[in-house]
Image (tube, rainbow, N blue to C red; front, side):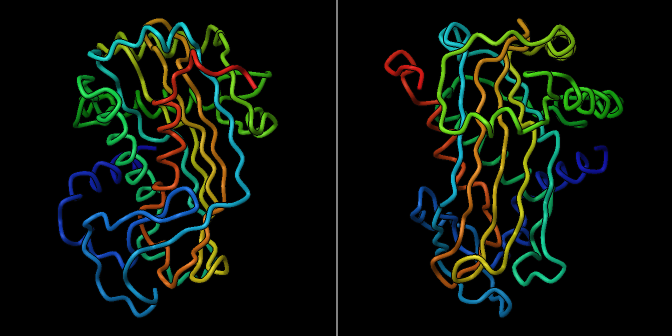
Length: 284
C-alpha cells in the first residue's frame, strides 16, 4: 500500500496542473442521464473519439445500505473526520484498451476522493476533514503503521463471519435499506479506537474496497462495471454510522469514452445516504 499512498498523494498535489486536465472525455453521467461539463480541460484524442459531454446509461444495479440511527442522529457536524484512502482498489482492464490511458487504481481513488469531499462539504460544511496520508495529517514515519492498519482492517471479521473486504454479505442483501445496530467485533473496534486516539479524530470515512472493470465493448464508446463498499465510522466509540454498497454497469450512449470521472455515477447514490431523513423511512 505504500506505493499506492505515495502515488495517490502525488496525484492530489498535482491535481491543479494542466497535465491532469488533458483528458479526452467529458463529465460523467449520473442516474441514467448526464452531467454538465465539470470545467476540466479536454484535449484532442484520436483514440477516444469525439470530445464533449459523456453520457452514461446505468443498468444491472444492486445496492444495500444500513445505518445506526442513534449514531447517525448524534453526528457532530463540527468534529474532525479522518479520511482514509480506499483500502483496496482493483482497476481491471483488457490488455488492449483505447480509453484507458488515464485509468489506474490511483486515478480511481483520487476521483472517488474528489466526490467524497464535495458531498461532505455539502452535508457538513463545518466538519473538518483530514487526509490520513503520510505528509498530510500523518507524519512520514507513520507510513508503515498505516500500511499495517489497512491490511488489518481488510482482514478483520465484520459480519456473517466474513472479512470486512468481502462483498458477499451486501450483494446477498440486494435492494435492502435498514436501520440496524450492528456491533462490530472487538478487534475492529480496537483498531478504530486506536486510530481515533492516535490522530485525535472523532469519525473516519472508510472506502473499504473498490472494484472497477473497463469494457470497451459496452455501449456506444465503452463503459465499465463498478462495485464499492463505503462506510462512515464513529471511531471514538468504535461503531458504524452507516454503510453503502453500490454495484452497477455504466455504458456510454454517446461517442465520448469514459476516460475520467468514473465516480460521478456513485455520487447521487452516496448522497442519498447523507441526505435522507432516516426517521421518515421504514426498513425494507
